[in-house]
Amino acid sequence: MTNEKRRGRRWEEVYPILHEMKNILDRMEKELDKETEPDLVRAVNFALKEYPQLLRYLDDGKLAFSNIIQSRLGR
Image 1: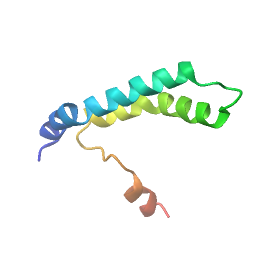
Image 2: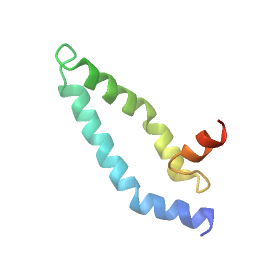
Image 3: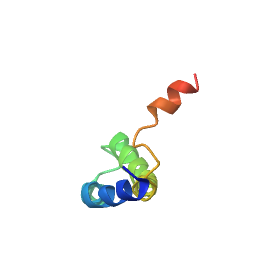
Image 4: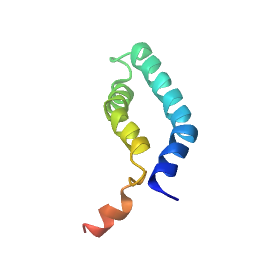
């Protein structure tokens, strides 16, 4: 599959899932209590901070969703 076709499929198939995940995270960020759930608040904030990188994955058909192979090669 060409990178352009892969990009198109990602936007069609993966973007709706990521978009819904972002909506859920945005709601959670507003509703969570930092005092009683600090670890969950940190996790949600981390996911929101990394969300633009997920969109980069959608735009670049050459990028893999997981970097496990690169991580293993670097060892």
